[in-house]
Length: 418
Image (tube, rainbow, N blue to C red; front, side, top):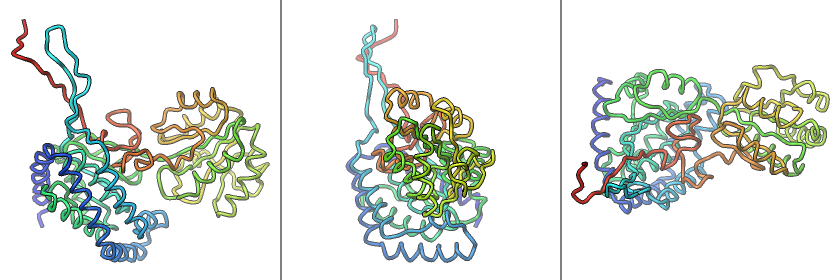
């Protein structure tokens, strides 16, 4: 196979499909999503079998526990994929909506219309559910997409791709609206990143190395985040029970994902009470804690944290811990070591909560809630194509609106400029 010719052909087909998708009726797009959901559920055994083959190969290749967790498909995760498709089908279609239509003194009316971005390239690692989630959002937002999953999930992704193509075809939409690259050759990624004549925007979903590679090579705009160094800050005016629940859930609900708490900050005034409760809970869950000197006086069995620990996204049952003087020091710590992804404060003080919301410069900022809620599905977006910590063009979980742009529309009645 000539890789360049193969990728160019995919790009041409995606561009042609994008023109058809841009004018597709909402009902047709929703019909495709619902059909895909039904097909995924009907082919559950085939998906599990393909995934098992990937899991066995990945185990032999020595993938770590976090990557294996992301790779694995279970009945529950397949059902969640189908639910995500159905939820996206139930969302309002932003395409074609005209907002802010105002009449100017000249008599013309000027507004803005939501339109698709065109062709979206998505490069991701391990998680095969991304194949369905990303496709769903691209279909509903009238875009075409080129998906390049990790080689470790090749069989899983191709099995899901079959479901996607069947659903699109059954609804009368072009099957090339969703194309999953079927080669493990890493050079395919480089080719994709250079195809600016066909690809309008690219989204990397994976580790820091992948995101840095895409950011450096891409000849089109990139929607990205590098790290998920998420914090929970327990204020000295926190409800202790809430604080314990939130901090424990934020770390242990799932380890290998970007919205997991990696660093716990605790105000000195509540540190003794909070850590005497949380320390044994994390210990029982086999979570390794690396803490500051003050925290080690309360929990003498934990390891000593280094400067690098506070800059680390572990994606594992490891966390850093620091006792801070107050809210100001907590915000300074987050600004110094955080990644602008997701940070949460636990407090009953509304003024402090508002300060945290205003001053913490992250894509998601929370009050009295686990960082694990930073997710497109939980935000009501149906699914997400990724999380952006950039400030342009989208920020936070990227759902339907993040996959659209706006163009100005002008309505006149024979008006001419004097």
